[in-house]
Length: 130
Image (cartoon, rainbow, N blue to C red):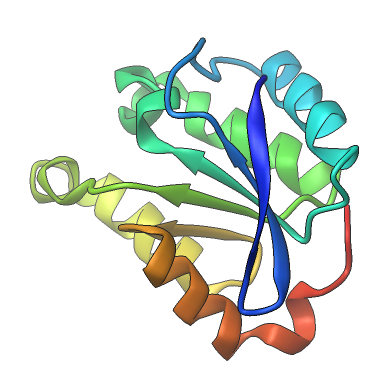
């Protein structure tokens, strides 16, 4: 899963490329973690375009499976992009996003600047690499 490594507020982030196959299963996550680990990031940034509609329909359980796989591997993840329309039409998704954003391991942010701001706030806990 191609991507690039960058530093945001002094913290290394592996950003998955905007275009390519969607993350649809735990196996896809394991493959991504393997590729990302070569860059020793503290966070993995995934564009919303790489997740697909099923991820945001919580009834499919894909979001839960993917989030759980990242948690098992202790990989911190930021989903990057505007999901305001999706949240507006799904109370359960809005609750999932709000709960995730209260934690330190799975965030939903609009852009890289928002991620940089959050990393600055949580700098102490985000520096451990994958």
